[in-house]
Image (cartoon, rainbow, N blue to C red; front, side, top):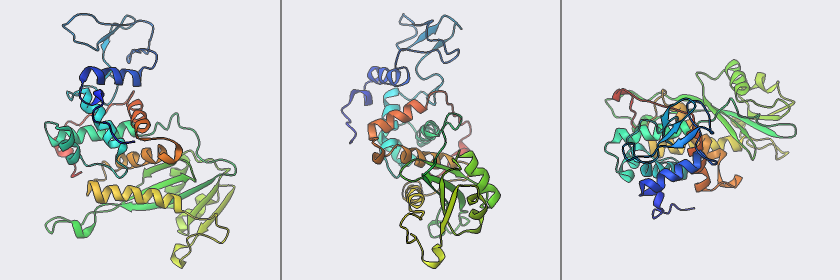
Amino acid sequence: MAIDLTNAIFHDEEKARAFFEEQRWLNGPICPFCGNPEAVKPLAGKSMGPGWFHCGACRDKFTVRVGTVMERSHVPLHKWALAFRIMASSKKGVSAHQLHRMLGTGSYRTAWIMAMRIREAMAPDMDVAGPIGGEGKTLESDETYVGGKAKNAHRSKPIPKKHAVHALVERDGEVRAKHIANVTAKTLRETIQTAKADLSSILNTDAASANVAPGQDFSDYAMVNHAAGEYVKDDGKTHTQSVESFFALLKRGVYGSFHAVSEQHLQRYVDEAAFKWNNRIKLGIDDTMRANAAIKGADGKRLTYRRPDRETAS
């Protein structure tokens, strides 16, 4: 669904505030400090401005921004609404420079911080996430290396280092992806466990030796030998094409939109790609629903950047 730029939430601050309140508090405001929904009342008077609430239980004041990635941000809410929508609708990502131009933020750094905070909102909450896979379901596990291309590096700069990313995809379902320090059997086993893989699943991998030991943990394990030109076995079921498709989207974002991603921030870009995969059209989720899901994911998260030297080239 295309972005309707005439929608009032993208240019009217009061409409945007009401929109964010509706997305965060479906049944009325809840205190972000004590979690009490019963003792919250709107604050009257012009001194505070619209959108302020007071909790009679803990006696704290708050707005819809408090306790989210938008807390303490001076960027108007209507620009936050558009930023969430643009990032959720951009399949291969959108750079902070492009976001800066489209939103008209005061500086590139403001747009960069907004983008990073939205990626934080898109990050999965593994404490509440359920298992991936299950009996009769197939998981695909693979690793790739992400980083800038040597041919694009300035001659005065060192050749960019590539960093490993592991992904576990449930075929026709979700992905769990993570930047890992190295590709070893021990690391892969720990990462697969962290991803909450259901060991009653069927696991498909390529023929890399590091995959063998983790593969033995599953009820059934099969591999394809890419080095021998094998990509799908004769049964038509054994392959890693789903996880390779996810990596293709991730890399297109890095090479085509961001150009350079530091290891310090790589996981946030991985989380963004995984969020879009898990909220894709094929699963019945359109751009509006995806953007709203990201906004809901902002609840209970904070991200601050205090030093300008932490910026990247994206």
